[in-house]
Amino acid sequence: MKLVVDNNVLFSIMNPKSVSSYLFSSIRVEFLAPEFVKSEFNKHKEDCLFKSKLSEHEFELRQDEVKENIKFFKSSEYKDFLEKSLNASTDLDDADFLALALSLSNRRFVRDTNNPSDFSVSIKAAIWSNDPHLKLQPLVRVFTTKELVERLLSGEI
Image 1 (cartoon, helix red, strand yellow):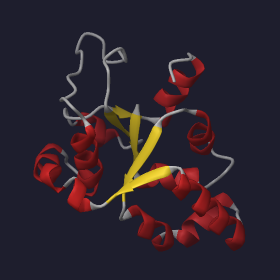
Image 2 (cartoon, rainbow, N blue to C red; image 1 turned 135 degrees about the vertical axis):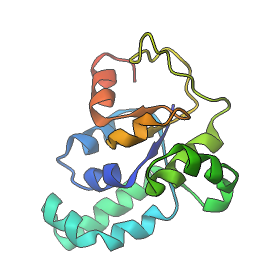
Image 3 (cartoon, rainbow, N blue to C red; image 1 turned 60 degrees about the vertical axis):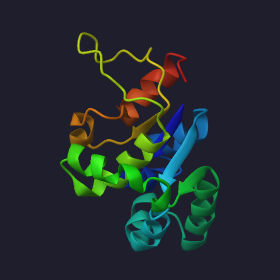
Image 4 (cartoon, helix red, strand yellow; image 1 turned 90 degrees about the vertical axis):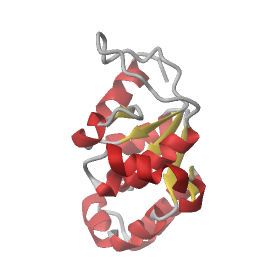
């Protein structure tokens, strides 16, 4: 499975003691993100430092470690899916994450309305996000941190 990681999850991963950080180091999936999130680290550095309680040096080391485990994509690599993403999402900030996941998926994910927790469908690319509004769009499967923990505990990932 490929997981596109959103900003808030990435910031949570920066705290080595967080559940998200544990998942990041435990689950065997390919982590992906739009390239612009690299600049978001510096933009929100103070907040990450405060919440993680890391020193500046520890933060830099952690940032390098996280970046080494994520494949980053330029917007030109998923630009053909941006319009579709903008139409599907209620939050413009989600468009790049959605477009990236769409660009990597061979087919559109169709939810099983009878069983919304059914994970048996083969997923090419999904999104890891805790934003509830992102789950409302029908184009790409979105997993919350809680759902990924449940999958890890059940041995699915």
